[in-house]
Image (cartoon, rainbow, N blue to C red; front, side, top):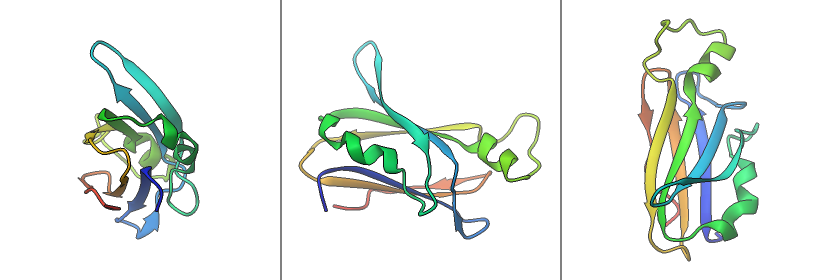
Length: 119
């Protein structure tokens, strides 16, 4: 597996990948943010837009932002006016950019599980 980051998202409430979920990845800098890429989860559950950006990753702090409420509303799920999870922000750090960091998100409208895979 190549160095860099990969992201996979599964809607565990339905047992299907979260195809169409909007997502973005940003690098946090001292006083600013840098957008790495934005896109949607593909039919295979992967955030394929991220593949072309692996050379951009350097040690530091990053955030993955998932538009959870918009995704579930688009699926026809009734959510409260103020959803429990709206835009979910997941902050993580990269130390060794020669390694692969896989982020497998397991998601519902009410919760999330993620861990570092791909080591």
